[in-house]
Length: 234
Image (tube, rainbow, N blue to C red; front, side, top):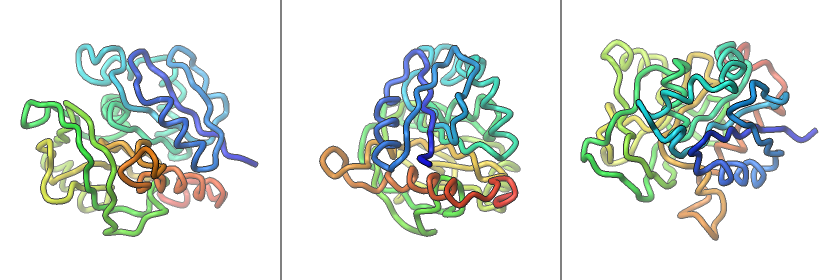
């Protein structure tokens, strides 16, 4: 049976259609989820796409965390059973929802950064990175104004100690992220937040590479494996 991957649309989402296309290219069925509906429609995994949810008022992702769709998503993700990928603004929403630690703040340059970015995959054992190998370098687009990952010293130490840094920027951070962090995962390794955009690198015609496709094929392989995520990764 084809896996069903939900893509949430918030007011101000920009990359929901791109994320849905990436899901389709990977071989799954994308399912549109509306922010105002407290219903995940029985999907197998969820993508929170990039954009400017609710206009980025207050803080990026601060209003989206209270959207009705999050009332079902948060407990399902926290249980370790629902794979969730937050891309750019989606990463910010995951942090604001306390599904991931830390926060995303204004780029150290105070400028919006838009470029093709080389990343090094650090954790290839999450629900979203199993198609990669640890240490593999991939090229995917980065486009954000508030992409600098920050966290307290104890949190950073915990992330490093538990191998929960999913990806780092190669040759120093373009936005001032601590420890050059581009993405992290939770303790169950089913929730991943990533600042760069893998959905824009799934086809040679439109991307700088096809390196981003692995994020989407990874979750399909994990779902096909059939093992309970929390048990397999906890």
